[in-house]
Length: 127
Image 1 (cartoon, helix red, strand yellow):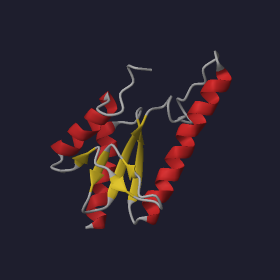
Image 2 (cartoon, rainbow, N blue to C red):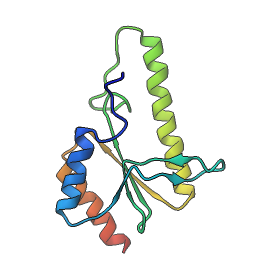
Image 3 (cartoon, helix red, strand yellow):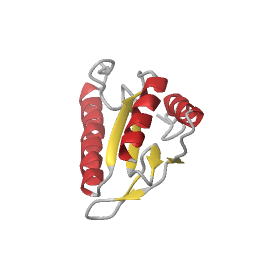
Image 4 (tube, rainbow, N blue to C red):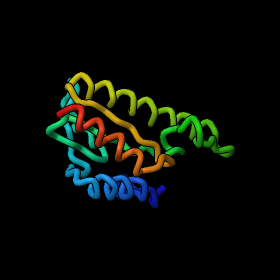
């Protein structure tokens, strides 16, 4: 698991490139303090003025309903590990929503240009 990056994955870089090409400016991996304990949550892409947090979720690690796979070895460990990831995602979504942030999630298999267009449309509506 050492080779798994926390940030700057290929899907993230493609999405950031598409957003930048559209003229959008954003923060990368900027911590947002939310929740009762004020622990920082680090979305992949942040639009602070619009209070928009974007996460790019990997199909395996976040259990994509279309492309997520279930390892056959050590299944008990992996099921628990992947479920903790999904539970954390929902908890972060809720914490950010309570702090008046909008959360958008993009799957790694999505077309990043379309995802960037979706984000851009949201930002136009929000302003």
